[in-house]
Length: 284
Length: 202
Image (cartoon, rainbow over all chains, first blue to last red; front, top):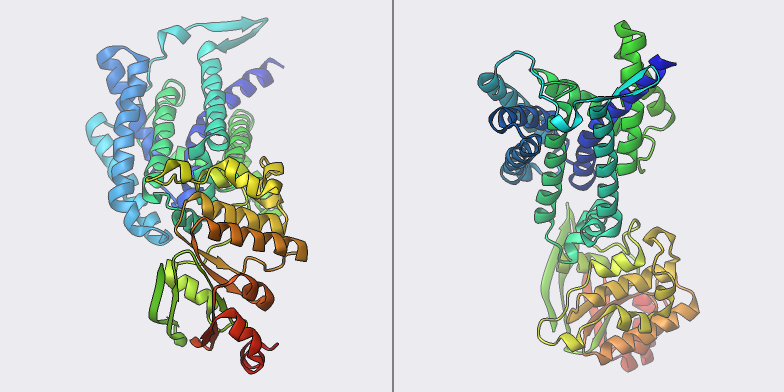
């Protein structure tokens, strides 16, 4: 019983981390059709910048601010000056973002070295709670809380605000939205910026328990893509449900059958795709 | 208001518009008639660059209207507002929270027309606004066109419904095989049985 509860908690907090990445990935794909392979690199970069800021200032909050600022600038440069030239050209986008993935990984290796590192937890969430013989670190509860808050905020943004209506209009029919006189290139940059913000946030808050090391960009990108494929491209609800499925499967898979940990994710993904090729909440 | 001169449009190798010209005067309605496939929609496409679909399925009626709103800079009091629009289309007010995907065909047409008005344009291009509508709704659409005209807008009305076009247009063009083959006042066309049977099949 203890084992199941603790693992469920760990799985949930990892799921929320995946949600931060998958929500941005899915939103960007839904609106612009961009497959951004460098999305995991935003996580990596966010974590390293966050770590550097914490070492200097000892402030977790400043680490988030710094990481988001740097990653958003990198993301917007990528979108405005590179990806916007290859609109609707998936092959070029994949190759381009794959190139960025390597460049960012190598620059990070050059600056921060190859040793695995972890961000310190914020002092507010150092302690653990004890329920009977179950020990839950308060930081995990914090991560789950952040995930739920971000999900709620994104839902409100998408369903209840004017900009959300414009984003949904763009997903429905990009040409007609442009025809109404809406500045689509500007909207694309904003949405790309939101995606980069969430990935950087994931990097900093994932830093204390996932850590940051060369290769984490690719590992987390792979899982985020599995989430988006299971949940359905372009669906926020799909990203949320997909994250819960993948986060829990990954955690229990690693805990119960460590030698088959990839199998426990990809086998359910294959089954879901066989039954519903567009993912759980995908259109079409 | 809108003048098109000698447009030539190709889809790959097929020569669709073969030198089309027409004119819509300020505050008037010009109707463009013709059978299926003579190039009417291609003409719209050539003018604005794309063919507009009807509505955004994931947006509510309110949001559909909201994102299209562009107040007129010169005279804010003359601008279309959501209230004005709903006095014109009471049905849409009842459906304000419904998603675009949940509307009937007639409601979708009204929403598309209403949304176009919210941008406070000077000229409207309407591609078969009566297509697939029940006779009662067609009459509503006619009433709408008259009201839009009173607001001083110009309309290029593309239609297959001859009676509707003759009733509301100030001038009519007939298109065949990518060319304007006939133009006159609606009254003249009404009397000209030969043109009607040759190009419109009535």
